[in-house]
Length: 120
Image (cartoon, rainbow, N blue to C red):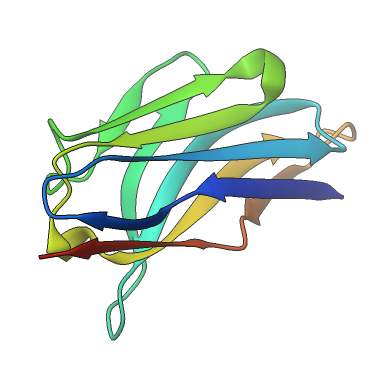
């Protein structure tokens, strides 16, 4: 079993900044990719950013240049730094981890979600 603990988020004004973090623990052999998704009311969950074990990153077009994803492999933790936030970024943000268990089984895990609200 793997646990994901998210922290960060909250309320910020238009143009402000926030940071999110997500720490994975438990039965982990190796983590392939870690990332962040978000879901706004009435909308589908969408990819925000993802980072692979080698450091390659992908971002949604809507956040390129404003958000930065990073990871600390030693701590099995992924971070999301969000700058120049807009009201359209308001959503519940979910951490995502794709890993191999000690038995080399591929598994996906999601965090509990953290609310990010950007006021205009």
